[in-house]
Image (tube, rainbow, N blue to C red; front, side):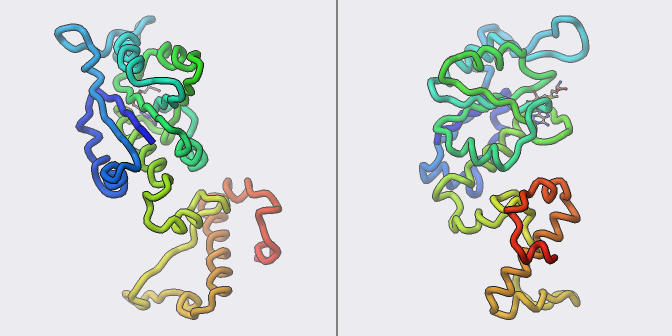
Length: 242
Ligand code: SAM
């Protein structure tokens, strides 16, 4: 997979050289490149923004500068991703779908955002998909953190990035539609808190049932909206007895 990120603060993205994403880059599983939007400016001041038509506070990022950058980076088959608080809320389903794409380009906005014609122009271009996504109902100063969130969520799903692929199966927001059960490690007793006895039993069937019950209870308590979305077919007989 190739990922291009365009930002006026490329140094903001340096954490993408660390940990699993960093390793995936070094081993060639992902070709991630960060670009400075100002490299596509043509004036002495390297201007990327201007005042909004219609008046109002703040500045808007210029379509001509973004167009020059994206014309170089966007090709047939590119998925152009625009982080914005007015986008669709990012979910694990998006991450799964976008992990199948061969080429992602992420355009990080600043100020009041990017001139709306940029999204419209590339959405109308055959062979290019455009998605505007939000990482939550709050407003950040820029799209860089939202780009990092997306890259981390997508890259960990690429084959070979997470050492044990089984650890992706039972996670929160996975195929079961539930939050993950609580997890424990050694020591079995810590500050008068004991690990649940069933986890020390070595009885695979009981452990599986306990984990499923815990996942259901946790989801019911913390995210009843997720539980409400489960189809009856997603529940087994023992679940219904809980
Ligand atoms: N004026 C915009 C609005 O009210 O929708 C907010 C602009 S925000 C200050 C600047 C940039 O930060 C946005 O263009 C976007 O790239 C990024 N951003 C801010 N909040 C975000 C969020 N919740 N999700 C994704 N990107 C966000």
